[in-house]
Length: 187
Image 1: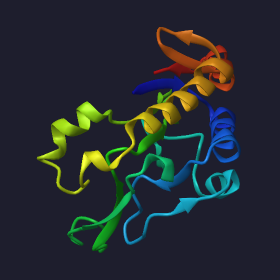
Image 2: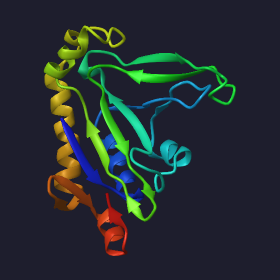
Image 3: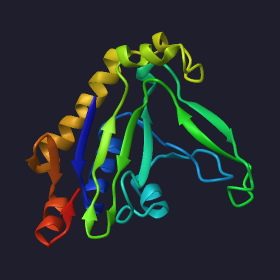
Image 4: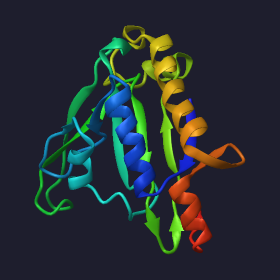
């Protein structure tokens, strides 16, 4: 399942509020900064104080969502870096797993608001890659019906409750709609 939408900072905070108050999803960094480990976030304030939810390009702020109902577990994989190319840093971490739900927020850049996105593998897609990607483990360890149900709930909330209009299949949330009326292009 993939779903794209336009959201400003206030819209993103509403989505996060829904995730923390109305779901059992755990929120992790998709990838860590150089020399740091993955963080898990438990409140909107933790995210608000750490990230710029206004500015940036496509997928400026990225998270992985997971709940124990999905059965499989997220993997926090250490990635070795060449310090010559990474300001002296030797590692970072990535959050991996077949059934994780991605939440990517696009930001404002050059008078354009970039798309935000939720998505995840389905079982069939994950099975295609299982033999080549040994990092993520076995596809069969995940409860794909639960993953679908969780993502549908999240998409439904964004698309049916928060979006004030649509551009094709993309939801336009109220803050993004106001930005467009002020001359910001939705990209």
